[in-house]
Image (cartoon, rainbow, N blue to C red):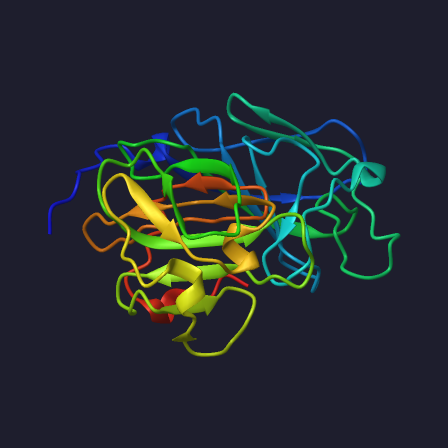
Length: 254
């Protein structure tokens, strides 16, 4: 299998731990040797069971997806949780949980967090694409230049739609769901029984991948890695060869 050698992975991926302070302007600086301006940030609470948040520069600040639930994207503007993508990190605002349901805070006093940060790059095999669904079988272009190995799609507008996953090790007639623990099952309307290529991936008639707007994070395979794409009912696609998933048993992000 062909792959690209990444001599300095800190240019494309870094992780950072931090403690929330329930204040605006909480600037989180990545502590690697290289500066990295992240395009995708995935935040998890380490000492609480609050939902994990996904932010990306295509959808912009205050537009969070919760990777462990099927709820729609929400601005959460009242909480001011995410303020900016910075040149070497990101800035958070007040992080509260006053909605009393999902626990959306990412900057709450006394809570510790980890943030996984990716830079969108064809070199590293990671792309972000936003698109609007049509409800009919169609293709969506990506900029990876290599066949997608892992695809993650989320409907951004409609609640009740799962984070849909495809991986090169399952059939193009099947799908997994990031927010479920179930095994892969046959869902022929997700990918229209078509394997992704080096320029496009195919979505079927399912509202989960082809209704309203979507976001997608496609990834191409490099050595010991896979390709990922996330689609939401507002479409956005992003290739990520930087997940460092070596097999499906490691796909436990929720």
